[in-house]
Length: 216
Image (tube, rainbow, N blue to C red; front, side, top):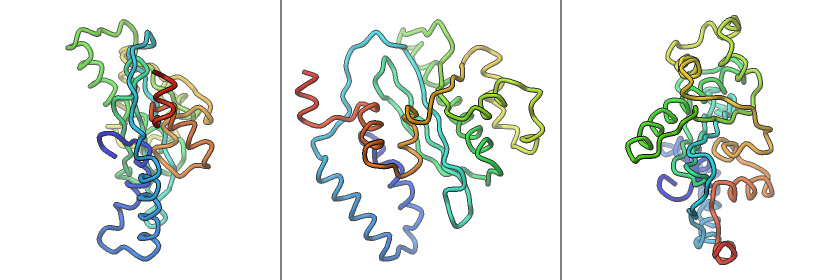
């Protein structure tokens, strides 16, 4: 999950919360993950040379997904020249009072990753001449990030999450809207219908044997 299979991030993140006191239901869910891995053991991340954007990201959140403490789940991933290089599924450390707040927290976490990757790319001689684009599917979140005056609903949020606003003002990142159906990071936050899951899995660059032969 950490090094080569972002498609099981959401499942592993969820199941890992019950390691101390698993139930039969969790055991059955774990076996489903193992069966899925057995059926897709020839899948791997495929990297190819492209002329696409040097660095782009996707950020998403599943609001109040933990039924025990109602904390949300953040998910984001980044691509370099359209090749997935980093991904994260993480339970948020605080309870978000709205989906906008949950998305804003996830976006801020993604912004930190974007700056680190931007600096790393520069060290390798790939100097992005424009802000790192992060795709977000929540219009309210984008509005809050871009408009400092619209803070009434989120004035209680921890100050560290406003890091994203500073990075936008410094033109280091740019947040753009993307429809939920094209939000690749959706796969990193929650369970999805099979067809949607497969579409996002392919968008991440995970392909099986036949698909690799087609690319070759």
